[in-house]
Length: 284
Image (cartoon, rainbow, N blue to C red; front, side, top):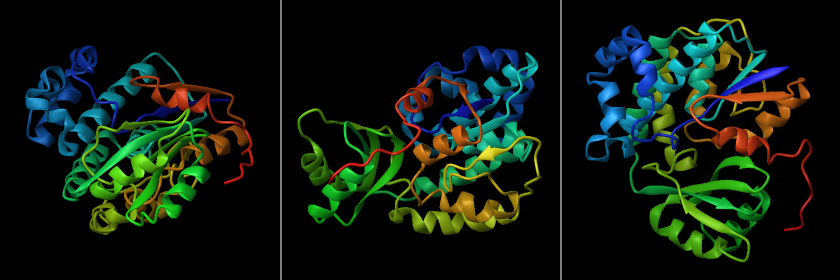
């Protein structure tokens, strides 16, 4: 069985999607009208580093992901499952027929604006430690404003939170065989510091229409099949709850998936290659 996965914010880069915008001028023009700016020019030129801004980055990544899926669909590719990492889950829902592309883009635009309102935080990737070890280290250091944000693989975790405390967390987490790298986002995403943004997004989701879809999507919040009846709860909670990518991948494998493809890069498939089928016990 085959699954297509969609990355989220952090994969944005100058020049991304250039060939896709040329192949899909109608969809690109419609997206630009909805967003109020020329998204192809934003991605091509990245004026004044605009792609570092959540308000610009999320719609841009979503659109490039969506057009890449149209390429695959046009080529006759079919998948048994879809999944997406954070923002990428909206692309998975579009690919699965739960949302149409304009509706998905509008939700992403509103989501990005709300998430960008939360300032004073940051995010780093910790490579070389398990999630359990990271959480134990944060607890031992008394850093109550820093939280695990993404469980990406067995030895790659992102943490986010208050910028001052995050600096202390970086020092506590560094050690032999461990790398701590900045993540290009502008806030403490997927942590309790984002609860207000999640709550504000809930009525936006409540007004949207989520269909049953034709292909299952594995939720990166619950690690279970996405239920359109629970869309408001899942997608609002996604903003302030960790991305459970390890749990999602294990659930997909348990459902029979043995092959993963990815649009717009190889970030997620690299994570997937580093996720064991069963968790390994580790003393912390």
